[in-house]
Image (cartoon, rainbow, N blue to C red; front, side, top):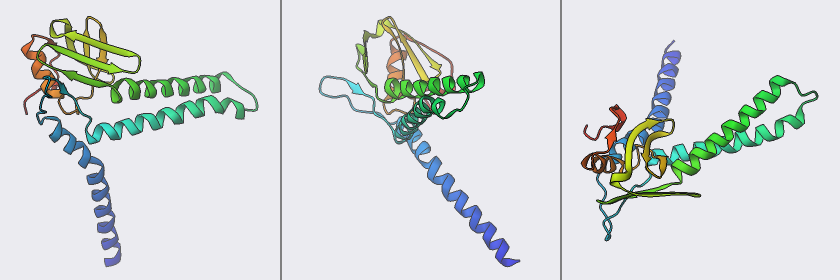
Length: 186
Protein backbone atom coordinates (compact mmCIF):
# COMPACT_ATOMS: atom_id res chain seq x y z
CA UNK A 1 0.00 0.00 0.00
CA UNK A 2 2.87 2.39 0.66
CA UNK A 3 4.07 1.85 -2.93
CA UNK A 4 0.70 3.04 -4.29
CA UNK A 5 0.79 6.14 -2.12
CA UNK A 6 4.31 7.02 -3.20
CA UNK A 7 3.33 6.49 -6.85
CA UNK A 8 0.40 8.86 -6.36
CA UNK A 9 2.70 11.47 -4.85
CA UNK A 10 5.20 10.95 -7.66
CA UNK A 11 2.42 11.44 -10.23
CA UNK A 12 1.21 14.58 -8.45
CA UNK A 13 4.76 15.97 -8.36
CA UNK A 14 5.21 15.27 -12.07
CA UNK A 15 1.90 17.01 -12.88
CA UNK A 16 2.92 19.97 -10.71
CA UNK A 17 6.25 20.22 -12.55
CA UNK A 18 4.52 20.06 -15.96
CA UNK A 19 2.05 22.78 -14.93
CA UNK A 20 4.88 24.96 -13.62
CA UNK A 21 6.80 24.52 -16.89
CA UNK A 22 3.73 25.42 -18.93
CA UNK A 23 2.46 28.31 -16.80
CA UNK A 24 5.87 29.70 -15.80
CA UNK A 25 6.47 31.49 -19.13
CA UNK A 26 2.96 32.97 -19.00
CA UNK A 27 3.45 34.48 -15.56
CA UNK A 28 6.98 35.62 -16.44
CA UNK A 29 5.55 37.29 -19.57
CA UNK A 30 2.85 39.00 -17.54
CA UNK A 31 5.51 40.31 -15.17
CA UNK A 32 7.81 41.48 -17.97
CA UNK A 33 5.01 43.00 -20.06
CA UNK A 34 4.58 45.77 -17.50
CA UNK A 35 8.27 46.70 -17.41
CA UNK A 36 8.99 49.96 -19.17
CA UNK A 37 11.08 50.02 -22.33
CA UNK A 38 13.53 52.76 -23.15
CA UNK A 39 13.02 54.90 -26.23
CA UNK A 40 15.71 54.82 -28.91
CA UNK A 41 17.73 57.89 -29.91
CA UNK A 42 14.87 59.11 -32.13
CA UNK A 43 12.26 58.77 -29.34
CA UNK A 44 10.60 55.57 -30.64
CA UNK A 45 9.55 52.79 -28.27
CA UNK A 46 9.55 49.47 -30.15
CA UNK A 47 7.32 46.79 -28.61
CA UNK A 48 9.03 43.42 -28.10
CA UNK A 49 7.69 39.90 -28.11
CA UNK A 50 7.60 38.07 -24.80
CA UNK A 51 8.33 34.40 -24.12
CA UNK A 52 4.62 33.65 -24.22
CA UNK A 53 4.26 35.48 -27.55
CA UNK A 54 6.93 33.17 -28.97
CA UNK A 55 5.06 30.12 -27.66
CA UNK A 56 1.81 31.37 -29.21
CA UNK A 57 3.62 32.17 -32.49
CA UNK A 58 5.01 28.63 -32.69
CA UNK A 59 1.56 27.21 -31.99
CA UNK A 60 -0.03 29.45 -34.64
CA UNK A 61 2.40 28.49 -37.41
CA UNK A 62 2.26 24.82 -36.36
CA UNK A 63 -1.54 24.67 -36.46
CA UNK A 64 -1.57 26.61 -39.71
CA UNK A 65 0.69 24.09 -41.43
CA UNK A 66 -1.19 21.11 -40.00
CA UNK A 67 -4.65 22.39 -40.98
CA UNK A 68 -3.56 23.53 -44.44
CA UNK A 69 -1.78 20.24 -45.21
CA UNK A 70 -4.60 18.03 -43.92
CA UNK A 71 -7.27 20.22 -45.49
CA UNK A 72 -5.52 20.08 -48.85
CA UNK A 73 -4.47 16.42 -48.92
CA UNK A 74 -7.38 14.71 -47.14
CA UNK A 75 -9.81 14.73 -50.11
CA UNK A 76 -7.35 12.61 -52.10
CA UNK A 77 -7.66 9.78 -49.57
CA UNK A 78 -11.45 9.50 -49.76
CA UNK A 79 -12.99 6.70 -51.77
CA UNK A 80 -16.25 8.59 -52.22
CA UNK A 81 -16.45 12.31 -51.40
CA UNK A 82 -19.56 13.28 -49.47
CA UNK A 83 -20.88 16.64 -48.36
CA UNK A 84 -19.87 16.16 -44.70
CA UNK A 85 -16.26 15.41 -45.64
CA UNK A 86 -16.12 18.37 -48.02
CA UNK A 87 -17.41 20.69 -45.30
CA UNK A 88 -14.78 19.38 -42.87
CA UNK A 89 -12.00 19.90 -45.45
CA UNK A 90 -13.19 23.45 -46.10
CA UNK A 91 -13.24 24.12 -42.34
CA UNK A 92 -9.68 22.76 -42.08
CA UNK A 93 -8.55 25.16 -44.79
CA UNK A 94 -10.34 28.08 -43.12
CA UNK A 95 -8.70 27.25 -39.77
CA UNK A 96 -5.29 26.99 -41.48
CA UNK A 97 -5.70 30.38 -43.14
CA UNK A 98 -6.95 31.91 -39.87
CA UNK A 99 -3.91 30.66 -37.90
CA UNK A 100 -1.57 31.81 -40.69
CA UNK A 101 -3.21 35.25 -40.73
CA UNK A 102 -2.82 35.52 -36.94
CA UNK A 103 0.83 34.52 -37.19
CA UNK A 104 1.65 36.98 -39.96
CA UNK A 105 -0.35 40.00 -38.79
CA UNK A 106 -0.06 39.72 -35.00
CA UNK A 107 3.07 37.75 -34.09
CA UNK A 108 5.32 38.86 -36.99
CA UNK A 109 4.15 42.48 -36.94
CA UNK A 110 6.27 45.35 -35.72
CA UNK A 111 4.62 48.02 -33.55
CA UNK A 112 6.34 51.17 -32.37
CA UNK A 113 5.27 54.57 -31.08
CA UNK A 114 6.59 57.89 -29.86
CA UNK A 115 5.02 61.05 -28.44
CA UNK A 116 3.56 62.00 -31.83
CA UNK A 117 2.88 58.80 -33.83
CA UNK A 118 1.99 55.13 -33.81
CA UNK A 119 3.36 52.77 -36.49
CA UNK A 120 2.43 49.20 -37.42
CA UNK A 121 4.24 47.13 -40.05
CA UNK A 122 3.33 43.65 -41.24
CA UNK A 123 3.63 41.79 -44.52
CA UNK A 124 1.82 43.94 -47.07
CA UNK A 125 0.35 46.28 -44.47
CA UNK A 126 1.73 49.50 -43.03
CA UNK A 127 -0.09 51.96 -40.79
CA UNK A 128 1.55 55.17 -39.66
CA UNK A 129 -0.72 57.68 -37.92
CA UNK A 130 -0.48 60.56 -35.52
CA UNK A 131 -2.16 59.89 -32.18
CA UNK A 132 -5.09 62.07 -33.27
CA UNK A 133 -5.76 59.42 -35.97
CA UNK A 134 -6.01 56.56 -33.46
CA UNK A 135 -9.72 56.03 -32.82
CA UNK A 136 -9.95 53.25 -30.24
CA UNK A 137 -8.34 50.29 -28.50
CA UNK A 138 -10.66 47.38 -27.77
CA UNK A 139 -10.39 43.66 -27.14
CA UNK A 140 -10.80 41.74 -30.39
CA UNK A 141 -10.55 38.20 -31.68
CA UNK A 142 -6.71 38.23 -31.75
CA UNK A 143 -6.18 40.28 -28.59
CA UNK A 144 -6.27 44.06 -28.26
CA UNK A 145 -7.39 45.69 -31.52
CA UNK A 146 -6.23 49.19 -32.34
CA UNK A 147 -8.47 51.05 -34.78
CA UNK A 148 -7.03 54.01 -36.69
CA UNK A 149 -8.14 56.19 -39.59
CA UNK A 150 -5.86 54.11 -41.88
CA UNK A 151 -7.14 50.71 -40.72
CA UNK A 152 -6.93 48.43 -37.72
CA UNK A 153 -4.53 45.86 -36.33
CA UNK A 154 -4.16 43.54 -33.36
CA UNK A 155 -1.31 43.40 -30.86
CA UNK A 156 -0.59 40.99 -28.02
CA UNK A 157 -1.13 42.53 -24.60
CA UNK A 158 1.83 40.44 -23.39
CA UNK A 159 4.27 42.32 -25.62
CA UNK A 160 6.75 44.41 -23.73
CA UNK A 161 5.87 48.04 -24.26
CA UNK A 162 2.14 47.37 -24.72
CA UNK A 163 1.23 49.04 -21.42
CA UNK A 164 3.39 52.05 -22.30
CA UNK A 165 1.42 52.23 -25.56
CA UNK A 166 -1.82 52.22 -23.54
CA UNK A 167 -0.51 55.03 -21.32
CA UNK A 168 0.45 57.08 -24.38
CA UNK A 169 -2.99 56.42 -25.90
CA UNK A 170 -4.69 57.64 -22.70
CA UNK A 171 -2.54 60.78 -22.72
CA UNK A 172 -3.77 61.42 -26.27
CA UNK A 173 -7.46 60.85 -25.41
CA UNK A 174 -7.83 57.62 -27.37
CA UNK A 175 -11.01 55.69 -26.52
CA UNK A 176 -9.98 52.56 -24.59
CA UNK A 177 -12.49 49.83 -23.82
CA UNK A 178 -13.09 49.15 -20.13
CA UNK A 179 -11.55 45.67 -19.97
CA UNK A 180 -9.33 43.97 -17.40
CA UNK A 181 -6.95 43.15 -20.28
CA UNK A 182 -6.52 46.86 -21.05
CA UNK A 183 -5.67 48.15 -17.58
CA UNK A 184 -2.27 49.74 -17.06
CA UNK A 185 -2.03 49.47 -13.27
CA UNK A 186 -1.83 46.28 -11.17
